[in-house]
Image (cartoon, rainbow, N blue to C red):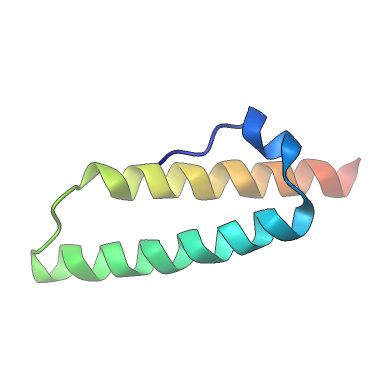
Length: 65
């Protein structure tokens, strides 16, 4: 499930950080599956990387505002 940038406006900072941590864990697991050759949905790697970037961008915007 991809995170939409507009959805992040409704989330608090702590919720975004929790989401960031869970995405980071999922990315690690996906990389391990890829290394073992057991990755079923390679597109999920891309989704997670982009979700991670969206959340980091939003957190940076909140920090500078």
